[in-house]
Image: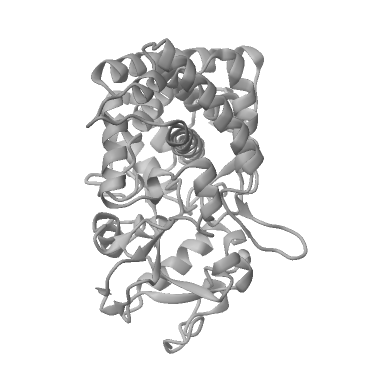
Amino acid sequence: MTMPLAPHSDTPGNGLPAEADLTAPGFWRLPPAQRLEAFALLRRRESGPVYFTEPRRAWRGRHAEQRGFYALVTHADVREASRNPTVFGSAPGVTTPQPARWVQFLFGQSMVNLDGREHAQLRKIVSRAFSPRLLADTERDIREVVARVVDEAVNKGSREFVTAVASRVPFEVVCNMMGIPERHRPRILGQLNDASENIGVGRGPGIRFRVPGKGLRALARMHLMIATLARERRRRPTDDLISALVNADVDGQSLGNRQLGAFFTLLMVAGVETTRNAITHGLALLSAHPGQQALWAGDFGRYADSAVEEIVRCSTPIIQFRRTLRADHVVGGRTLRRGETVALYYASANRDETVFDNADTFDITRSPNPHLGYGGGGPHHCLGAHLARQEMKALFEVLLTRSAGVRAAGPPELVPSNFDNRIRSLEFDFAGPPSAERSSAPGSRLTRRPVPDHATAAE
């Protein structure tokens, strides 16, 4: 697809073809390759970040006036905004619409929406709770969970990968680590699905963006359950993460019930949803490029680290987060003003051709690979990044070395979303070993095969 550029204008929405309107729900329904081409077009502009005006319906209450954002699409700009919290603040919120004050009061403030001392103190409490002993126990547990989940999928003849494997592994690992009793888990999984059901782009008449935070009743039920467990752990601590968080003494502070509920919700999204999507995209990518799958299976340990990083780069599970400028600042040669909003498009940054050679090539040998898939570094770098990497390596080791025939049986069903790169379902089977790709080159172009629309999907 070719999209010629019109002369740039500072008038919101001008200077770009209609296909590159990041505020339009239709943009997020385009095939992934077309979306990536639009981001490449934005990266090539020499006039700095482009301003997009959001429709009035995207804002509520005190935000009901027309608002907009500057799109940060280059690796350099997204990296700087991620690592410079003095200028690029996470408060009042990194998603859109920003969380209402009553929601923050009722459910507590998520760590991703905090800045400065408040964020540092909360992160310090959580980081201390992830003790070496807890992490070692969790790594052992990951292998046990992976072996059991894959065995059950094989024995039951499962054919849908998201529900049978990709969702179960991170969910069970997080629940085990937190110390969630088995009796509560089906209800939590249902509440998680309800809370995230409306993330994405709406369909039908009156189309609008759907965003995180719609399933408030499900969220409330989940918080009540966590508060009950917190009271039990304060009376009778165990070796789980909930006990460590509610009984911590970091500068005289521990997590209260609302803080614990907000952290658990974040862990379910960051630790379950994003890992599930990365795992599913990983299988789809490897199936679309069997030469890469055969290379990894032939020497799993040698390529484990680089393959996982390349899966994260190509899938980038989170599409974007917002930041609010706390001071005037020059970005890409353009002066942005205090109070203005920027959107950090990690997917675009992870395909920046000035940083990644053959950026649209899936190459498990890629090194170095400075992708921004875990938040770009800085104070908000994902706390669960190490855990997610361990889960992916453990699972693909089983799938590629013990069950060499695992492969996607067709293209994934993507959820059109401006927030996360979600796959709703992916059919798979264990029917025979993968055939070698025609090319013997280390990397495989994402557009060479008929399956790869998913492979070029951004965050």
